Each structure stands twice: as C-alpha cells, then as structure tokens.
Length: 445
Image (cartoon, rainbow, N blue to C red; front, side):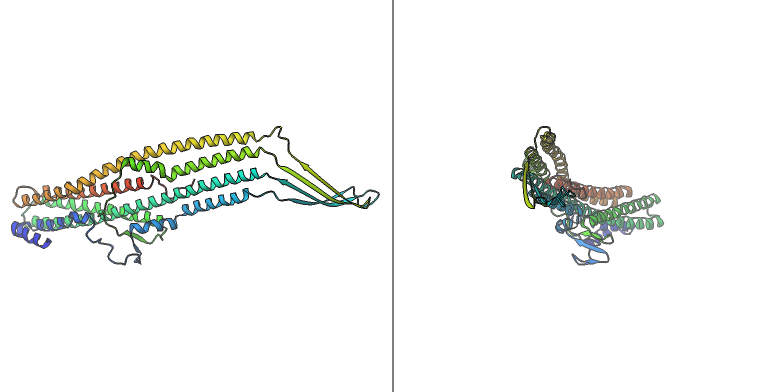
C-alpha cells in the first residue's frame, strides 16, 4: 500500500517534489493502526517472551500481578506483623507460672538449723481476664489481616500503574522515532531542492528546525521510557541491569464504570475502610479487656518446712486477694474508651475521604473517557485527512512547505495527546478499581 502511495505522488508531483513523497510515506507509517498497537515494537523482536536476552526482559501486564506481590518487602512486613499478633493471642491465654522456692527460718539459734523447706506460690488470672485479653489479640490480628490486604492492593495498583506508564512511554518513543525519520527525510529532500534552487533556503531551515525538534522529542521520550522501566523494575524486584518492556497493546480500553454502583462497592468492599472497622473492633475489645482487668487476681501460697527444733514437718497455706480501693483500673478504662471513640471517628473519616477521592478520580476517568472516544471516533481520522489534503494543496502550489510541516507537527501532537488521554484513562480506572489505594513501599500501618 505504501509503495502505491509513493508511486502515485511521484507521478503527481514530479521530480521537483520528491521530498514530499518521502514525507507522505513516513506520515502514513504513523497511521492510527500504530496507536492501536498493531505495528511491531521496534525494540522487542530480539528475544523470546518471558526470557532475558541482552539485559532485556519482556513481560505482560498480567504477569505483573504475582511478580509485584512476591517481591515487595512491605507485603512481607505486613504479613509478619499479622503473625506477631497471633503470637500475642497465644500468650494472652496463658496463666502465670507457679513459683517454687527454698525457705530457712530461725537458723542459727540454740537448737541448730531451725525451720527449713520448700515454698510454693501461684497467682491465678481469672478465665474472664484471659478470654478478654485473647479477644483483644484476636481483634488486633484481624485488623492486621486487613492491613495486609490494604498493602497488597497498594502494591498491585502501583505495579499496574507503572506498567501502563511504561507501555505508554514505549508507544511515545516509537512515535517519536518515526517523527524523527520523517523530519530527517524532509530536511534531506529540502536541502537537495535548495541546492538546485527549486525551493527557498527558508524551507530548508524550517525543515532542519523541525528535525532538531523531533530529535529533542525523541530524547525526552527515551528518558521517559527508561525511567518508567526502572520504576517497574524496582516494583517487581528485578536486578537493576534488566530493562523491562511491556508486550501488551492499546487495543482494549477499560470497561465502563457506573459511578453510583462503583461508589457503593467501594464503601462496602474497600480494604482501607475494612481496616478502619477492624481497628474499631480491636478498640472495643481493648475496652472490654480493661474493664475485666479491674477484677481481682487470687494469689495462693504454701510452705512445707521441717522444724529441726521440734523434729516435725510443718505445712502452711495462704490465700491473698487485692483490695480495689485506689486502683480500679479506671485510667486504662478511660483511655480505652477514648481510643474506641477515636476509632469510630476514624471510620467516618476514611469513608468521607474515600468518597471525596472517588469523585475526583471519577471526574478524571470521565474526562479521559470522553477524550479517548473523541480522538478515536473523529480527531485522529480528521487530522490524517487534513494532512492528505495539505499534501495535495502543496503539490498544486496552493500551500507552503511551512504549512505542510505545521500539519505534520499537528498530527504528531494530536497522537501524543491521544496517548496522554489513554494514560489518564488507565490511571484513573486502575485507581478506582483498586479502591483508590496508593503507596507500594509505604510502611504498613
């Protein structure tokens, strides 16, 4: 098809406008199909999917999910914190250890060794207290479980966002490379025509300026792609010398989001809100524990002694209970009450914050969706058609070369804007579907 186009424009324009034919050929290489991901990636054909070669590694967005969770230290940290609460639950159910000792009394008197023997003592914690302590530990364990779920979702969200950024950056780099190729061909052809005095030096200088601008654009795109790849490399725990590349295309856009339905699901299923509810449960359990701690512990003691004076064995037993006159654990009870009320307000805060954040992200999603739809349905095709008409006008002397270059730049800018709109759409939809969580390396808390 491209060869036919070149032949057609050769016959129409003649030898004096050969550079426009090169221009036409390169521009059609920047067609809409390129943006939909149907052209081959110029730097992903040298190795097999899933294998490393020359320091490069090809990966799909689907693979990101498990890889991110396996390597992220914050997920392991949250898991260990959860396991620590299980240890607390075990410890809370245990009674105090008994004590055994040796006692010597009245030693050194007139009759010798006095009274000597063994002592035994034990403080008994009521079952109610132990159950309450285990209830607190169990509630804190469940809160830690929700904290782990929050951290896992943060990691997943950030990994997918990094993957999308890399995919968009790859597309921009490919587009920038083709723009540079167009600009180089146009500048070369304009230079030849200037030498043969078939066009002005101004046209050549403008073509050279566009070529340099295209080089700057490519340099920026390469840096953007390299940075996105490094970010994803860190998130997935790969060695720093590996360059990651995403194999997916931009064929499929996210499914439509129903604002009211998704907001309802967010409030009902958000790991962050579930964590806040679990923390309130833990605070309530702590209050119950402190109320039970006001109860008394019973202490017992026993003595088994041999009286060397009387030549007989003596046994003594005793029981002691504290008198709750001053310390009724009222300070800890009041503290637990305040913490429970604070946890209740935290639930309210989290819900309102999620709702406000959702509306902001949904607005971004809605704007991006409208933009992407408009670009796909009309703007891209209209700019392509404008470029073709400008080429025809130029060949008939009805427009200047500068106008043709400006149209070329407009086409490139429109396609970059389209990619930016897709990036915003992917980002907003990922955040919404990922419960608005962010911070893959945040400390779990």
